[in-house]
Length: 411
Ligand SMILES: Nc1nc2c(c(=O)[nH]1)N[C@H]1C(S)=C(S)[C@@H](COP(=O)(O)O)O[C@H]1N2
Ligand SMILES: [Mo]
Image (cartoon, rainbow, N blue to C red):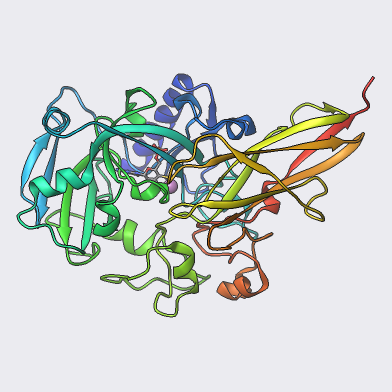
């Protein structure tokens, strides 16, 4: 049976990735539907650049088999034509963007009660430098007349049992800093990350960065069922999955939204069930990692913080589980769409301590402490809690990411 085969195929895919990438480990997928591995250790978050070996992987269907360089991207809707990867890279300038990839399901495993699917803790986040061609140049070249606004739908070349993997982003974002990526951290994109070409949407949840890009389609609206000339479901990944909704509610498809900031959508009267676009403000401590005891005295605490399209305005660290806070210093590379490093010094005393970080963005929005209950719904926001939601999306509470550190007396 097809489903059993897919399960075995997925197992083999995960085993092969684990062998190639020593810095990742498998993550529990309740429904056995995704190929997923996450950063193997907290130490990933003590560095600005994530080696590909430590970069998480997340996709639903089988990796398409690519035997030669015959892969093309086709253009449709208000766009027209087709281009091989070589044509794209020859015709358009090479650019690089730094991007913090974060799965919209990062933190799902922190929902209580548990939601279905992949039980990520905090391991589905990584920052890499992606190289490719500016999407704005490509769109200008293949559009008859590029409009000011509208939606760009990207379709993956991964064969899906239930339909195509298609995601829509607003044209404003598409022509801003997005690229069609062919390389990552100085090497060709590995198969599991989208070889030979993927869309890269800086600062937005990972699901928007469609791997194994097959088609780009311009339209007035987001993808809805029946919008594409293809078999199976077209709109599942845009209109059903990857939308934030309370228990027992099913999202209604929408043609368009005016608000792209995911947090603003949560707060919006017009949008009942937000789309996972721009990332919420988030932070993680990378060192100390809690795996080995540290010596009493002055200890360097280091981590990363990000805020999607917004910038990180403040990072605070607590050494007592969130009772008191000290402001950390931000340092290192500062690129839109990528995380910042932070550090502070801790006078560690013998015993067990709970370290946790919390970041705020430039609009004054701070990570909530905890995730609410299913009964609270979006009302949890009013008491400073992240709303428990059925898909377990976009959780950015800080307490679940705390690290327990054992401090030994100094000699
Ligand atoms: N074609 C295609 N693109 C995809 C997916 C997929 O299943 N198919 N998964 C998305 C999701 S949910 C995430 S989080 C990111 C992960 O990118 P990575 O595996 O390179 O880390 O890819 C996105 N792009
Ligand atoms: Mo994801």
